[in-house]
Image (cartoon, rainbow, N blue to C red; front, top):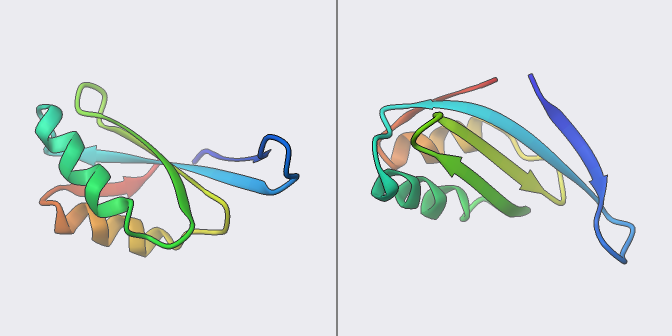
Length: 83
């Protein structure tokens, strides 16, 4: 499980990055679908997703509920677990 907190540039706000393992992705379209769903979660400020590695990293300016991320990935048609 990886969760890191970093101060944002110039504002002193802490951000948190949480990683998930996603199964079922195979291409850039898969990445775009996941990015689109996860970006709708309140507080999310950054999303890194790789079909090649199955890695999803979600950065937020407030704690994000794992269930919300997992549900968003499910809505996109894939399966995720926190890594």
